[in-house]
Length: 121
Image 1: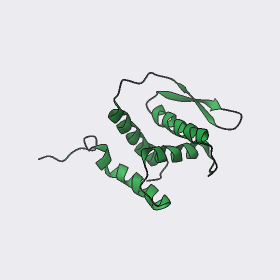
Image 2: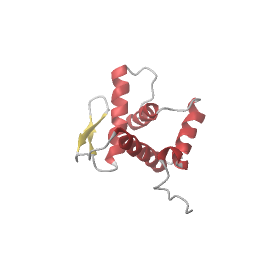
Image 3: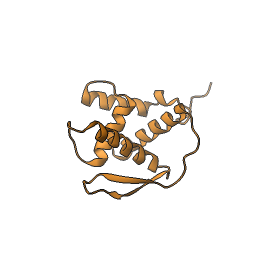
Image 4: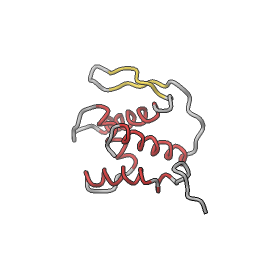
């Protein structure tokens, strides 16, 4: 039987995804959920660390992360920053129809890409 290629490995078993999870677990003490990873990417993109974000700001941070991750495929582009220094994104292309599992897989693959680009894994 032939070995699976990197593209054929189910994302949750991809060694690069496992490295992302392990790196975050090592830093923060517990295995992160997808939402936690998005929150961390959002904070990184904002460039401000705080433990006093409001619930709405936390949602905004996850939105920033999703936009950043989907920008790798041209679905969003950075439109600038607001008066408080938060990045603003705009839709630049329609996303194809995807079920929840496909959306999650796309986000996880892009999270891997994000951490590789930023030399975090």
